[in-house]
Every structure is written in C-alpha cells, then in structure tokens.
Image 1: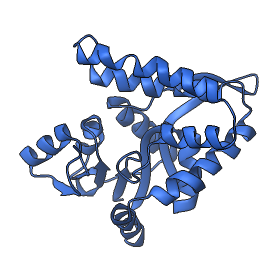
Image 2: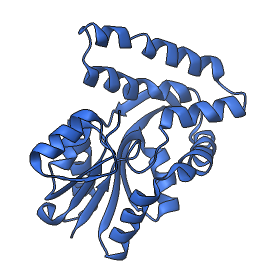
Image 3: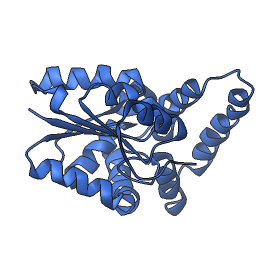
Image 4: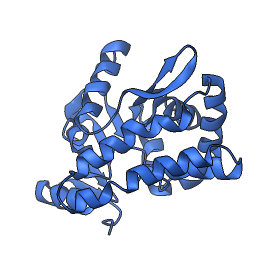
Length: 226
C-alpha cells in the first residue's frame, strides 16, 4: 500500500490550531482568561530560547504538551462542539488549495492518506471526517473521571510522530510500502516523518527545512517561510 502522510499546521492549512482555539474562545466568550494565561506562560519562554537557554525544539514540545490545559474540566462531548467549530470555521477555510488538491489526488489514486500532526487527535478526527481521511495521528487527550484532565497522554512532536504513526499502522494492520510513499511537512521538526518515505515533500518550508530539502534534492511546494 502506498501512503501519504500530511502535517496540518503550516502544511495542509495556513491556520495554526492555537489561533483557531483563540478565535473560538473569543467569539464564544469562554475560557479567555485561561487561554491568555496559557499564551503568556509560553510566550514568556521565548526569550530563554533567544538566550540559548531553551532549544527551539523544547519550546515547541512544551507548547504542544501543555495545550490540553485549554480543555481542562470539559467532557468529551463538550470538546466535540469546540473541535467541530474549529474545523468548520477555522481549518477548512484555511486549507491551502494547492496542498488540498495534492491530498485529493492521492485519494483519487487509492493511496492511504493519514494526517500526522501535533494537534489534538480528536480535532484531527473531525477534520479527517470532512476530508474523507480515515486515519489520524495526533496528541491524545487524557481523561479523568470522564473529563479532560488538562494533560496529554503523549505529545505528537518530532520523533514521537514516527512512534505514534508506527503504533497506528500496527494497530490497524496497514502494510505501507514506505519507499513508494509520500510525506508532506513544513517544519524541520517534520523531518523524522519525511525521512520515513521515498517521496518527502517540503511544503512552504521554514528556513531550516528549506535548506535541508535543497541539500537532499527533495521536492518543494510553495515559497520558503520568512
């Protein structure tokens, strides 16, 4: 089986999930203090990165690990309301037309499309339903007594994307021909998934991924991010 693995933020769509949640909380006047506290706590870490005291990878891993705070105390059915709003009002309108067309072409050719992203797995499932994508790999939310605990079971970032993707393939019994398969990502942190396949594609890549892709002769879609 040939597969096509797509990252979400910055790759399949121009919107970033944290901004999409911000739009939801602002429009519905919910959890704005919690969201602002989350944002302030994590933006304040950026100077540490600039000073060389916190790696860029660690900064983004903490961001993904702690995003479940935004849903703490909610029941899964309440979460679904938010995920569907974010999907319909923020993510679908922000799909990159050229990349979405590539995804549809893979589907037309009978390839197994999988969304692989640091976004909440439950949110990816909503988006996958809209796009006709059955399988998703993302950050899973922990439940405690039927409510979101505010913690992630395992953040889906960097090399962990490969670990979680491998678990999905084992669980579903999908047998993928990696040499013939494709992967699409926009960040240097997507390299572990990109290097799994014979056809890696850098999509509107950041400067590090742009250089990495150019050195290796990978296909590039779109312009380099500033």
